[in-house]
Image (cartoon, rainbow, N blue to C red):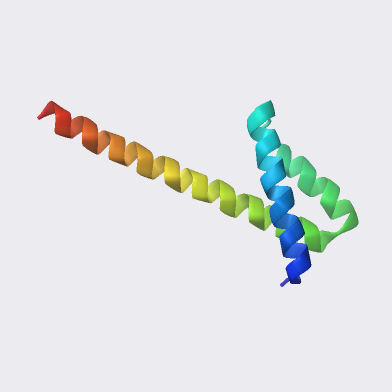
Length: 79
């Protein structure tokens, strides 16, 4: 497990990377950033990729719940 400072850096970088991805539409930018990090620090690369993946998974979960709720509401108004 990486030390707290590395995790904090990785979390900040993940947030920044996702913001750039949203603005530019480059949805795989995080892979390029990970490759750049890995050339210098495998520890930071792993922490960054973990931070990215958990954030992306959270967003997928939220999107799923939103779709499910919308489908429920649509069925409710049809009845």
